[in-house]
Image 1: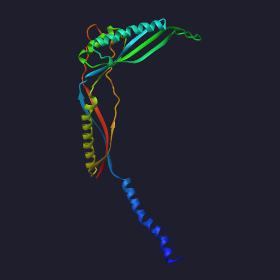
Image 2: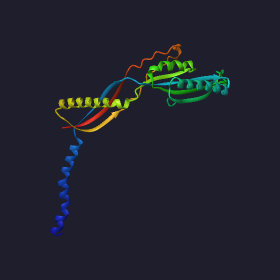
Image 3: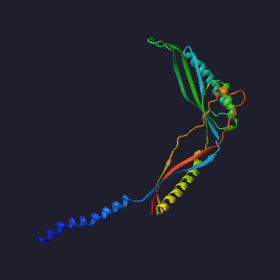
Image 4: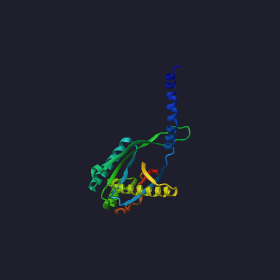
Amino acid sequence: MSPLKIRRAFLPVALACALGPWTAANADEKRFERTVTVSAAGQVTAEPDMARISTGVVTEAATAREALTRNSDTMAKLIAGLKDNGIDPKDIQTSSFSVDPRYNNPLEGQTAVITGYRVANQVEVTARDLERLGEVMDALVALGANQMNGLAFDVSKAETLKDDARKHAIANALRRARLYAEAAGADVGEVIAIAEETAPFQPVDFRAVRTMKAEAVPIERGSQTLEARVTVTWALK
């Protein structure tokens, strides 16, 4: 083999040896990059300005037609009464409707027999004038509603108001990150990632339909806490 060929044969090996330690060092540096991750929350308080009512009518009769007719008549009066009490038609929405047979309780070995039918019609009502909410609740019962599945207060501009809670959450996370970094002998660097956590909505439950009197039902809206939770990762210097 000529000298020229020998030099060419060893050239790739020399390059591999020179590049090998540099690549490994960079990989180790990236692998052990120092970060701090903190989860924090921010809160703001707002007064609810609307309420969502889940209500309806359940009717039972010997035949499905009779149960349906009686239920439909009552629901028609209920919906008309809601509109008369200032509820916008767009704020009344049917949420469920069902027709189910009722069975007897047969003795062992006997077949169950249909003894009647049950019709249920449920609506979701949005009340935007909370000053008249008690009157609306009273009217529901007077109009024939015999199912009151819940009352939930809400803030119409909650998403906009939560922006302040988000800012507070970031500020709280940064304060804690700096605390941890200082304790570890480091400084907080640039933000690497931000993630917002979402919490399930928990409505204020209301099940007092059987205790309502003729006068308007007393309702207290109270206040609502809007919370934002974030998880932020910073690089450490």
